[in-house]
Length: 291
Image 1 (tube, rainbow, N blue to C red):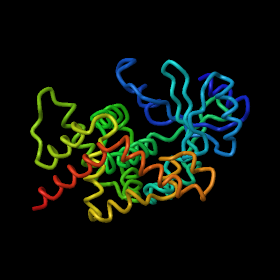
Image 2: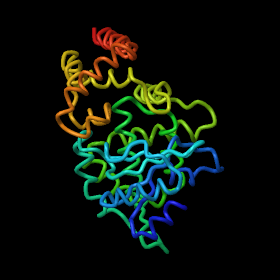
Image 3: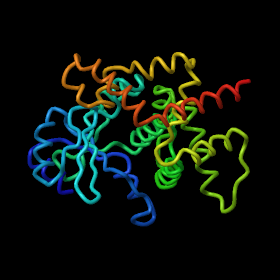
């Protein structure tokens, strides 16, 4: 609220996202925890926002490198201030859909610069964000619980025809329906419900992923759409956008890409050899499953 007040003073629009909103729907304070607080803001005012955050005692961990800026303040405050909802180097359908996000934003009552999404658009966004993680490294049971809590609180009043149309446009309509049905079965029953084979498999994906997914899940999901050779090539020769995230100093100039490439290879060989072992393990499991 203090950050938003400063943004109001300087006429910078903002919109809280994800857990900042979802936590209010849980029955008791503290039931829904987050590692960070996510807020979308006017990217043309990035330097002004940085000045605000620094003046409030935050340290700028990363600003202007990716589509979200990271600010930390001991002992526990962590803010991700987003300039985009999805990066152009990620899912192209998601990026295109949310590139002009202001068409979906609604003004907050009593605020000049505060915005929110309608319940339908918030649900579509939380589903798209979940799918991004689910199809990558995976996502944990908290995501499934978020769906259950949101639909339990808001579902009766939602325009499901609109939601179906938007999720179809994003290519996640089947995922939305399957995940919502599973969430209802898993959390509305007092005892373990009877699940179909596909539902049990989906639930298992949520249960073993941890909160933010696993590296092995990321490899397995990649191998569903590309060969092992293609995986190794894309893992080594990453895009410039990916390089800026992996090795932040390369964001200063395209000429630093080769330096970043050498840095990454040395870092993996010296300090992250476990990644190589995990990759090989996931590939063996993939081969065994497809024998």
